[in-house]
Length: 79
Image (cartoon, rainbow, N blue to C red; front, top):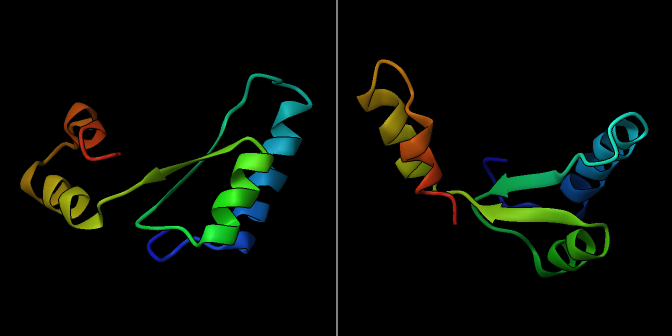
């Protein structure tokens, strides 16, 4: 997400993950967003969906400064 994550975003991830878990039980649900609303964070936890804070400015800088995106550098900005 490029905006604040809300309960609808969590529901969407949960729907995808639920379908995937039918054939791959170890699939993880992860939502990356700059921030998350408190009710959505609570819902994510109850549904085993992980939330990772994403710094969009840093990600944009990394992608424009490199011709090929270096995922190791990108990982450092996921908190």
